[in-house]
Length: 154
Ligand SMILES: [Zn+2]
Image (tube, rainbow, N blue to C red; front, side, top):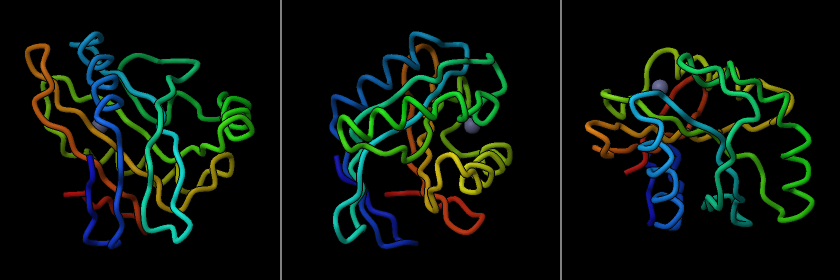
């Protein structure tokens, strides 16, 4: 599957099987919120991002999501992933049970923190949000973070 972001003029490529895997985790946890990290790499010209896998955080704190689950605990995991597969941390994914795939102000603030986080040092992290209703994925959206804003991929 390929997505394009008008704002940054960049593309994102992800295997349908990976999306299906993320859907499945989200549905299994429903009606609880869940999420984790996305890993992958960029093309040489940095115009295309390949999402290759997901990681679940080592600690999950239940409801209030995103940055609470401490990216710091993942430092070694990311390091090993890069050594073994040359994949980087590229962003986040989480579910909105009975909600929309639109980001919240909490989500935006968390992404601002991530972009400023020394552990991951990434200027344009991405965010995937899944809207789940009645144990089904209703909708999903990818966003790219840039300069204190989130911009959707189409
Ligand atoms: Zn959210």
